[in-house]
Amino acid sequence: MRITLFTGSRAALSPQLDSAIAKRPATASLWCGATGLEGDEQADPRHHGGPERALHHYPADHYAFWRSWQQSLGLADPATPWLPGAFGENLSCTGLTEEGVHIGDLFRLGEALVQVSQPRSPCFKLNLRFGYPDFSLMMQLSGRCGWLLRVVEEGAVAPDAELTLIDRTSTLSVKRCADILFNQALVEADLCLLAEHPTLSPNWRHHASQWLERGKAADWRHRLLGPQGLSG
Image 1: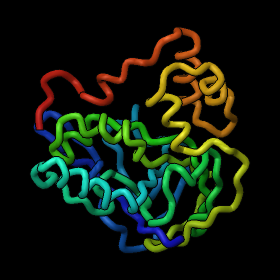
Image 2 (image 1 turned 120 degrees about the vertical axis):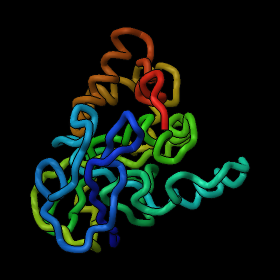
Image 3 (image 1 turned 30 degrees about the horizontal axis):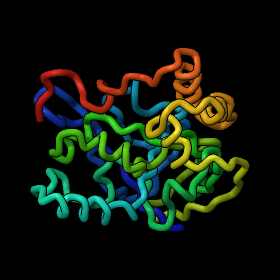
Image 4 (image 1 turned 180 degrees about the vertical axis):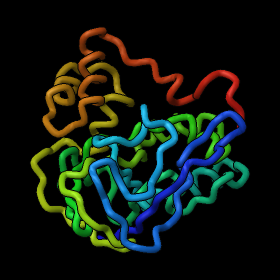
């Protein structure tokens, strides 16, 4: 499948907050290294970027859904138009969604080899990006979160490179993985599946282990709703 490649730089998202969520289409081939694309920035390296979150893929198929969702609720146009790149993704294409992509899937991306490491965890910056309070929560509940990838082999990637599935060893889809942690009650067998999954990111395995140990879900309020008093 042919992708569109996006990168972005740190900029003000609100008077109190910088972000690199605003991505623009690449116009030339970029080097894809262990921590992502050449020139792509992250304003919050604690929660974004790094080897396990080097790239973000968001399905272009979902933009029609979000446009319909907005119109069906009679909401004003979003602060950022429903166009690929709006969700801060580095890669976008049609035909791949969370149901059909699995944790650990290996893809050839141009000269690089990349692997699905975890679902994307929506955060409050999406609320500011689109201008809808609690949008990140709606995104999480819908399962239309996209996914993150690690770079197994570095290489150059053209703006319209082909993304080709090379190997699949897991039956755990991105959608099911996200639902286990975000959208269902405690199911010990499912959480064990995540905690022991060899190609799921260490951070997600840790979240699953913590839920098993504590017997209750994590508190997602800060991630989804943001610091108290933050404004757009």
